[in-house]
Length: 263
Ligand SMILES: [Fe+2]
Image (cartoon, rainbow, N blue to C red; front, side, top):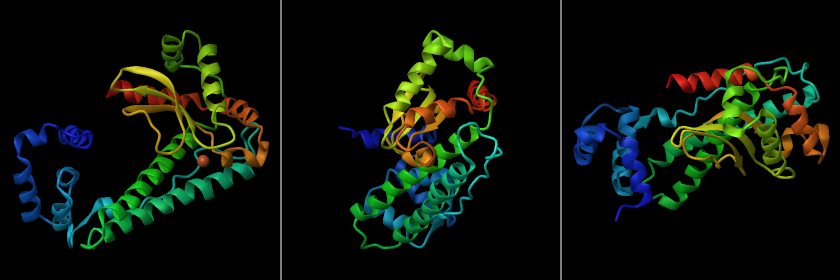
């Protein structure tokens, strides 16, 4: 019986593994250069723990560099309507910036831990969980800040897409806000996304940085962690959701939709 994990690994490998057997691929890594490319790392993903440790011993790879840099705010934080500069700067520096630093630290610790033969897999798993948390935080924050700074007036082809999947723009907006407000008082993200596997568009509810519908590509991202609004609105999250809507950069949302159409 093939486990779900094994299945996902098989999907990741794709056509490349049809041409070369698993054992041959691993042998190739062992005999090859010390620089592991993306394909090689995918091959290591199917190896057992003992094989992994053997392969990675003394090796380095880009996955462990931990050199991510924060992206600058793509708008003037003094110009947002209903969201203060102080909040935005604090959010960008402390929460997003903190996630970038943490991701870098985790990647480097992962690389170092791979050289420790005696490290139990479950301890390594704690670091892998942190890698997932921090990656989700970095990516979603970058989408969030990039879709702010506009006039909030929806336009362009993405409006047609929204109408196609939600009937009317107003109905989509009502559901997007309801999804966001369902996360008030805690953590999470409301995400309008195109699901490439299903070929559908939905407003997804995400309880934390790790919650994402598989194969969903964000079009519009709203941060519903309390740190995104508490400084300005206290517990009145719905007012923040309304303020967010007034600052959406729909040009960026359209750009994302067009990028997906080209894939
Ligand atoms: Fe945030």
